[in-house]
Amino acid sequence: MFRKNKRGMEDKLYFLIWEMIALGIVVILLTMSVHGIASNSSYWKKYYAVDVGLMADIENINQGDFVINYALKPQEDVPQNQVAFEFVLNKNRIEVYTAPKEDSRSSYTWPYAKAKTVMVSDQFVISDFLVLSKIGTDFRLGTYEPKYLETCASFDTAKTIDKTTKIRSTALTPDVKEYAQSFTSIIGEYGSETTSTTVLSVLWYHAPKANFTITYSDDATRLRAEKLSCMLAKKYSQTNINSTVQTQVYAPSTLELSMTANTTFVKYLNDRALLAPDAREPWILITLDDDALKTDANTFAGIIKTEVLTYYGMK
Amino acid sequence: MSKRISNQMRNNRKGQAEYLLENAFRIGFLMIALLAFFLLITYYINNKADTRLLQAETFANRIVYSDAIMYQDEKTFRIYPGIVDLAKVNDTRLDKSISYSATRHAAAKIKIVSKPQQDGTAIFIKDAYINRNTFENLYNMITARIYGKGSGIQVIKEFPVTCYDTTSTPPYYYCTLIVEVIVPNS
Image (cartoon, rainbow over all chains, first blue to last red; front, side, top):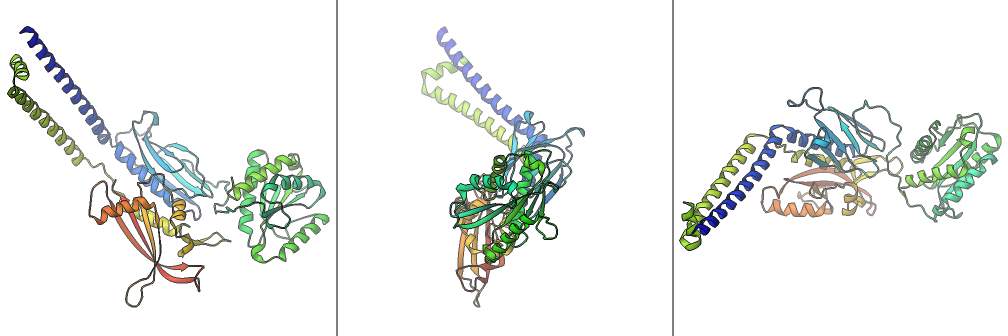
């Protein structure tokens, strides 16, 4: 009799314990949910993620440059000297966390469609004032005062280059012959056949008194040549921190060449002029100064090859 | 009392049924109370931002102003919103051009028809989809008048445009671009 009573009580006790555990779980989940709603953070996280995400979509239409300044609404439950939210810009989405991110229990995410020529690196911003900008190929989320960034045009220049195409490299003076040859040999696998169509011409010149300058073609190929020149100048400046490279469009009055170089250059232009306008390739003239000549010819050729492949969308 | 219940549980079926009913009511009442508590909170606190129409507008404008289907000059790289390049109107090209990381996001059907004839009808020219599977799934739900989180809303926009078709003579002719955007409810 005693045993039966004891086992019965034991069963009932287990039942009560499980019931209390289930109730506890439900209460904890409800409290967490209510806390999120009551603190307003979940609503504003969603609001900012959607708003900034849709603006990111519009900026990725990819026509021209955009800068959008975006001020966040002060949060009632956050002291004035504290920032309420942390934003993360990824390659395909915007994430919003309650600041600081490490203490945030959850984030709200909104996807956007990145244009294929636009570059994005992960960016973290803790601020009440956002600057969403698309300048050239750079898409950024920051808090800084927008200023002109050294960027190159974002239009798509992707094209397949192989043995059926040709990238010409010509030295206008003997002292840069090594540079022209290094580039020819390093780019050889992408086009060196003499009979194939020329898609790009790189001309080399050395002027001791001039600045390191890249001059580009001025006709219908101007935009393409300008983009490549910009990319090369940017890459070279990044590799050689103290160097500055100027870029300019070709104008006979501003380009000063020696007698020998000018003869070769004019001959090149005349030969090119014989082609149909659509068949004319873009060209760039790299005028090296004495400092630039200190860079090894193979290193130089490697930098140009990387940028040329990026330009053609092959890297 | 407990002794009586324990005995009833083990010794007769009537006791077991009584015990079950007693607790079923108890658990059921608890669930109703919790549900009411939760519903009251969610009803009285506005935590929703309905951005579906805005999302649809943004998506439609993205299609119309970007190089996704619009003609782009090869030399100047200028995009001409208003001139549809028919060679670009295909699923592969569109999915590459406007690609979201989430598949359950906005989806669209792009339809090109001729300008209205004298009898008011238009001749079908070409169509293509962005995020085709999502579009077809949600479209079926919407046409079947199924609402709720699993369904979506549809926005249809029409633009009188010029079609550029290299295979026809002349290559430019007037046509109508119909953009049907579907945005999921959740």
